[in-house]
Length: 337
Image (cartoon, rainbow, N blue to C red; front, side):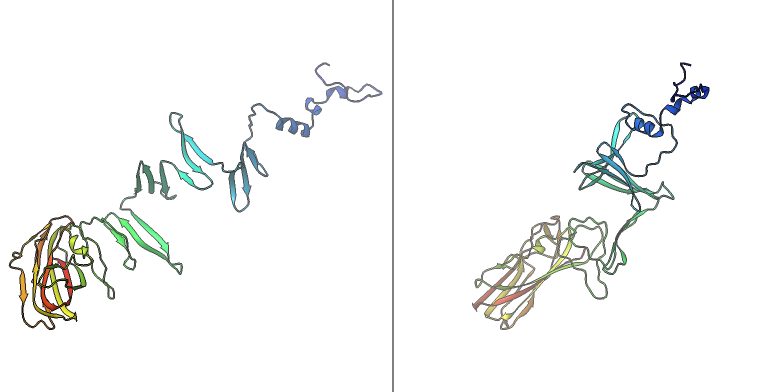
């Protein structure tokens, strides 16, 4: 009888059933729940499914299900981050995702994959100071898309194995030091393409024209003036890329005639280039009559530039006058090879 609980009531008669109550009848379900929740040692559950009707708190982190929003993981301490970590093959902890109050960090390599074909993915990999974007699919491409003001999806920029494409209706600005094996610059039906920098080396002949116009008050009679450097320097003529260039200039005194008796137009020896259509002594033009209203061209200068974008073209003009003229010079540099 020592194996059974004692009787729970004072019966007037002997009742053997009082000694046969199950052992678990001595603790209620509420008492069992309270004892389970109050335990402080390690607990192991063998339940296949555990359902929680509300949230769960683990340390300083709350796991909470919100209808229509799903499961959220939220620290209960201000400015505390959430981490996602895994173990590698030798048990080393590797950090993969970190969420802070201001940023989400993805560590090492990140893959964005197609669910139907997981082998087709694009990876983002940061190695030291280099970020690599790789689409591993065969004959793949990358598109950069945006929506315009009316919500239409546009693809202004795309890359594939054969080309980098900028949509014709888009404007590309701020390109500097762009290396091209070949390039075509043209115009559409209404607008010419604009260029105001240095055109780099190309292995194919490419026609390109740089132009400028400037009015110069000839400072001193019978003294040589370098038109390119006079006043505000016309620096585009001193940054010509390697190749063959035709340099042209015309001048007139339409803005202020003055009283001029002779003008001389000549080219100086360039820096970073070689003259290939004569010498500076031959590329020379002097006029001593009909100068009340004049419009005259310089002889063309053809040079081969070798200065890798550092040149110095010298355009000399001399006027002998009694009343100072203002001369307008129209300069052109056309790449012809």
